[in-house]
View 1 (tube, helix red, strand yellow):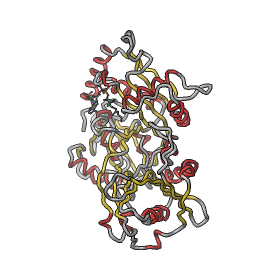
View 2: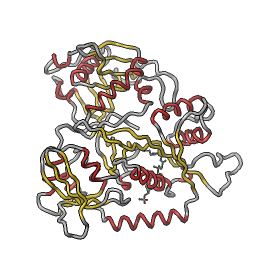
View 3: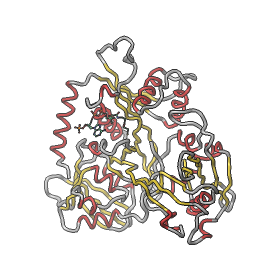
View 4: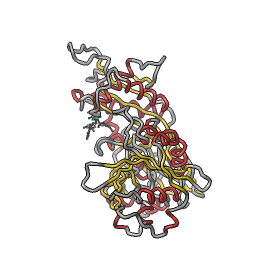
Length: 455
Ligand SMILES: CC(C)(COP(=O)(O)OP(=O)(O)OC[C@H]1O[C@@H](n2cnc3c(N)ncnc32)[C@H](O)[C@@H]1OP(=O)(O)O)[C@@H](O)C(=O)NCCC(=O)NCCS
């Protein structure tokens, strides 16, 4: 458990240090198109983002308009850090280029029981190499999380380029994504063949997926525990019709749609052959299935691709029904498991009251938060699967069951890990015998959380 007071002192002294030596101004504006053109500040900001992620220069081409148009749909708000009281040397990028970038859009997180909770999704975090490790990320994150909290958003989220950056800001790993390789030479066999052959799978132009994406995703999002909203760009990248880095349609992306018994599309897969592999392979670009039947039928289709020995997918769930449907389980190989969705609780009572619980009971948790947003002692009382979360006095009058930091609570929130595991990892402290077991009984979920969105 983090020592809240010590952490807050450290935070205060860090921000005081930054105040003294922080020659930057943070400005926030919408990423959008105005009168058919991209405002200069948005264009310069896009260039800085592309620099940070080692993308191509976007100066003066149509890419910026394409990005801004898509981001406007998401209501994306961009923040730039600009040098103030300085002059740029001749020939160098001018002061209108931010030295650091950061953005958010707000969509929803499926926390189970049919609840879609508003979520603050952070993206486009970059710091110019010549300005790194001077506290720019810390300043942007601190200011943004405080504003999200003030706006009443109970939880923030991101997907991380590196696993070591965001824990210090209170984020915890909530879901994982797996790279899988399924050997399909000669076709996939299923233990219950009828379960993988319901409905119809047909080929379509990839552009059909661009148009179907939002409808299919809305269904998947609504019934997938741990799913987070997708940005507008997804329908383009899923269908190969353009993405950050390229506007050109990808010509070797193929699409197959799944139709249910009534003839409605309830899933699709887009995929492309990978020609430089020794083993004939296709890679799944995107796979969405609103029903179990669609999921298995689309895999049945992928297993029927002649001349292909292996199908790879980088977004498989940690617990995958496909693996249990296959006649030969060992033909399903999980080649990598990586942290995927990171959550950061901002409002502990609101976040905890929003999800549903497996059993009734009570547990009292002391939460530490270096930024102060989620900290306190909270009594969680579950009756009929719904929690009442009460903030308790911190004067020692209320016995605490267990203690943890907000990063740990955020990882435990969707049940992707147990308190017992985090206790064994030295990250959760049991103060009262049985509290860890009670916490795990309450937070247990019948399905493993899975998020199909990277942002
Ligand atoms: C990651 C990145 C944004 C960090 O920005 P920065 O301004 O250098 O970070 P700060 O100076 O504010 O550092 C804040 C803290 O994070 C730590 N930190 C920053 N980057 C880190 C990294 N890559 N790995 C581990 N720790 C890191 C710092 O040591 C510092 O720690 P402390 O304050 O607890 O002592 C920057 O290096 C970058 O642009 N990287 C390339 C793009 C990228 O990966 N973006 C993230 C996308 S999810």
